[in-house]
Structures are given as structure tokens and as C-alpha cells.
Length: 358
Image 1 (cartoon, rainbow, N blue to C red):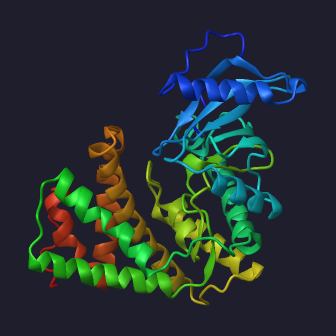
Image 2: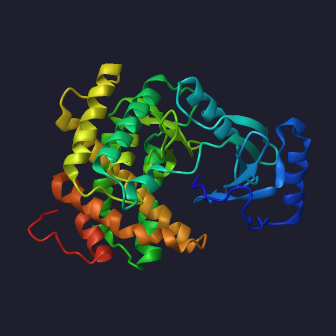
Image 3: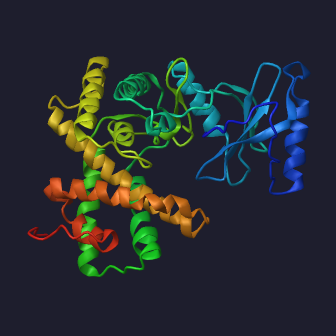
């Protein structure tokens, strides 16, 4: 949720609905909730929308602003959100409490955790290294707590089929649809080598609860810190997935790799002390993080291009150069990932593979 700054007493924009039936269902459901809550449907305004068909509206109540999730079936299912949110709360994480829900029609009334995301705080001109350090330490401590204490039983498994299916989005939507490039037999063979290596690395790791989008856009500055959002796609999978998401973000990048390594060491040390079965050698852990990041970057680059070409959300593709930089860096550092270089160069326009053999 990426909240706006609208509050009661200001002019509120009209909330657009896909059809009048859905608006009436929402209003009827809100009216069925306890009158003592003092809900004010007239105050509904957009808090955020994300890459899915789900959106969040802010609504005033007698106790202050609340969040209304609007997730229209059959495009969205709110039940995983409710289930996983309860798991996180039981593990001591700070997530929005569910106050009421209509799972049949896709409405959930939630606690409002505030209006400042990590991403906003870290990217504003007044952000300081000390502030970033404090926020990241909180995020890492919460990550370890989540991985150690959150029940993963019954969640989908991040298995080979899912890992491969995610990466297949890259050639389909990024290579072909976005750039109009067609791979021949040589490129297909290089792709198979790289994806095999990435999958083998992921599957060799211990399995933990995976948020799947543990990044500054989904962490909110709150008390206790951080507030955790957008966890409905959680799975049980590789231990390094969420730390890779945090350190190699989809929407902005750290300028200093030494900071990334320092925070990775903090996670590795804290995780081992808390009982996570992580390698004794941090160097191997860092390799796993970078390779896991490469798998995620291929997936998200494909998703962002699909959002542009299928869903009309072109702004996401503006971050493609960031993914190409991440992938190029990893491919130049690790020999098994080097076959990515000739696959990325026609897209990034940066030729760096001279001297490499594939």
C-alpha cells in the first residue's frame, strides 16, 4: 500500500468503480458493519494501487483512518491475504490487523499503518546514512524473526516448476514482446544453462517462509518498525530470497555495494544465531544471495514488461535498465552466469562480453 496524504477536512477525489454493482456491494457491506465504528463511506479515497487488480482505499472512522482492500473476484482472492497476515501476526510481525472481511466479494477492512513507506523515506533528499542504517537494521531483524517463527506449512512450495515458470516470463515478455528479439538455438542453449544453475542454487538452500516481495516499497515506517505489507503471495522457499529482494530492490538501488554486504552479513549472523541453517562461510551465502537476486530480476523484468504490454501499465518498464545492470554485474562476477551476457547485451545496449567464452 502506497498511501496518499489525503485526510478528512480536505477535498477528496471521487473513487472510480468498474461498475455500479461493485460500488453498491461495497457500500452495502460497509453499512452492515457496527455503527459504533463510525465508518464514513463518503470519505473513501484512493490510498494505493499495485501491479495486480487489487487496490486500497482509505476510509475515515470514529477511531481514525482505516484501509479498505478492494480485490474483485475472480481476479483476486483475499483469503491468502487473511491467512498469511494472521500467521505473521502470530509470529510477532507488525502487519495490518483484519477488522472485517467479505471474502465472497473481495472486501477487507484493515488497520491503517500510516503513510510513509521505506521507499519514500530512503529516497527523499533529506534521508541520511544514519536513518537508512536504522531502517535496514529493523527490516533485517524483522526478516529473521519472520523466517524463524512464521508457519510455512500449507503454503505453496517454491519448487523447480515455479522457479522456471517465473524466469520464462523474461524471454516471452521482455526479450520478444518488449525488444522484438528472437532467440536461435545458441541463445536457447545459453538460457538453459543459466536457468539450470540458478534453480539448482535455489533448491539447495534451506526452506523458510518467504514473503516474496520483502522490499522498501512494502515496508512501512511504523511503531513497532517496520509495518509489513503485500504478503499475500508468500510461499515456502529459499532462505536467501527475501534478503536478496531487500538488498537488490526493483525500484531503486544502493550506490555502495559495501553497504549491501554489511547488511547481508548482519542478516547471515543473526539468522545463524536464531537457528537458520545458513552456510558457515559467508562467501557462499553472498553467492547464493546474488544468484537468487538474478533469478528474481529475470522474473520481475518479465513481469514489468507484461504489465506494459498486457495490462497497459507502461511505467513499470522504465526500471528495466536497473535489472540489466544487476544481471550484468552478476554475470560478470560468476562464470556459470556469464552466458547471460550475450542474451542481455542486445537489450541493454551495453557490450561487455568481449573476452568471455561460453
